[in-house]
Length: 159
Image 1: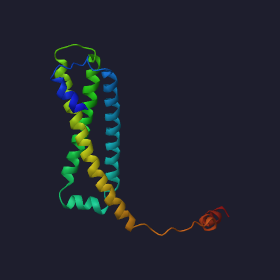
Image 2 (image 1 turned 120 degrees about the vertical axis):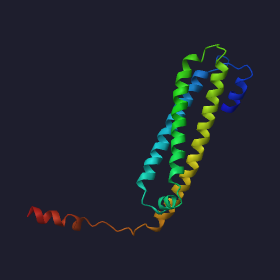
Image 3 (image 1 turned 180 degrees about the vertical axis):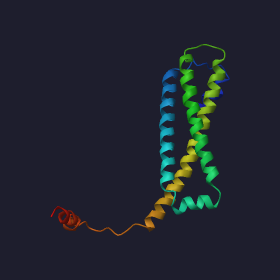
């Protein structure tokens, strides 16, 4: 849809001619903000599982820089989309001749952000799958808790 808008912007569509364009911009801002938060959360999960076998494999094959670049591109693209969409909102009713260029740039930015977000989500799901498989091999046996033994030490201190 966004790419279509971007392409059609060159053929006479202006910001003013798009029905509810302010709402579209607001939705894009919300979705990009949610994706930025989700990706930042995934980064913290990666840091938390840094000692797992899959992360060691990424390091062994010199993939660290690539994964960091994927995160950085997606986060930067998300911030640019959110900021550009916010700055475009006041001009949504403008019949300006520059509006078709603004719409084309916006469409290209949103398309790039979606593509990078899909790429990093695909990579992260692969890492998550590997982490789950690694953890599945290490699940300890469940032991029933014994309340009497758990509080036995405390009773000795009180006496």
